[in-house]
Image 1 (cartoon, rainbow, N blue to C red):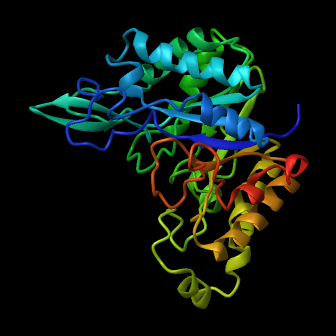
Image 2: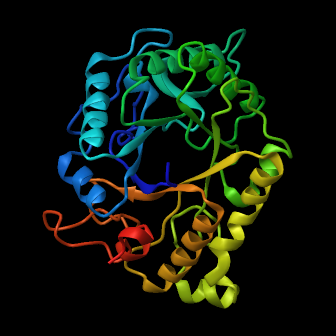
Image 3: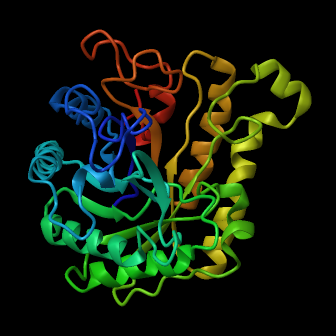
Length: 336
C-alpha cells in the first residue's frame, strides 16, 4: 500500500470548550458539532488526499463510562466511513480528548485525567478507556474504509497517571476483538515531534501481538509550537535565521526515535497560516522530508465549519476556490 497523505476533517470534536460541556451535556448535533459531508470528502479525494483523520469526542460516543455507545453518534461515524469508502479513501478514527473525559460533578463539570485520583477512586480509569476502545473496535472492525484507531489525541499534563500503561490497556482490549487494524499511539507533551524522546523516553513502549503499531507525532512551526502563529513571520525570521528549515529540524528527534526503535511514525497534525505565503516554504520543506522518511501524514485541518480559521485548507465558494496551500500539500503524483 502506498504511503498516504491527507487531512484532518474537523467538526465532530467541536463544542467541547463550551461552558458546561460533559458527557451529560454534550451539546446539540448540527449546532455544536458536525460530521463533514460528501462535498468535502469528494473534493479532497479528487486532489489525491485520501487519508482522513476523523476527530470525535469520547463524551458523545460513550455518554456513560462503561456503557453502550451512543447509537446516533455510531450512525454518524459509520456514515462518514461509508462516504470515505465510496471515494476510495481511508479513515483514522481519532479520539480527540487529550487524555481526559468531562463529567458532571458537584453542581459543575470537570475534565478528569484518566486514572487521576479523586478521593479513594479514579472517576475515569484506564479500564474505562480500554472498555471504550473494545466497543469501538467491535463496532468498526472490518469496515473497508477503516485505516486505524487513533487511541488519544495529544495526551498532556497527565500528572501521576501513566500514559504507557493507559495506552497499553487500550491496545490489549482492542486486540482481544480485532487483530488486524493499525493502532495509532500519540505521545506525551501534546505529541510534539521535537520533544518526543524527552517526553516519552528512549524506547517504544507498546506491545502488540499483531505488530501493527504506528506512533503519532504532531509538528507546528511557530516559535512555541502551539500552532497559533501569534508572532509575525518577519519577527520569527529575525529571531531564527534558520526558520525555513525549522519544520525539518523539528522532525528529526521523532524520526530518529522511530528509526532506533524500528517502529513506524505518523505525522498526525501540522499546518501553517494559509494567507501568509512566507510560511508556505517551511511547509513545503517539511513535507519533502516527510516524504523522504516514508511517513503517512494528515494536515491540520479542513472542515466545513472553520470559516476564517487561519490554518484551514477547506475550499471556499462551493468547493471551487482552492486553499493556496493545496498545490504544496497535494501528493506529487497528482500535483498539477
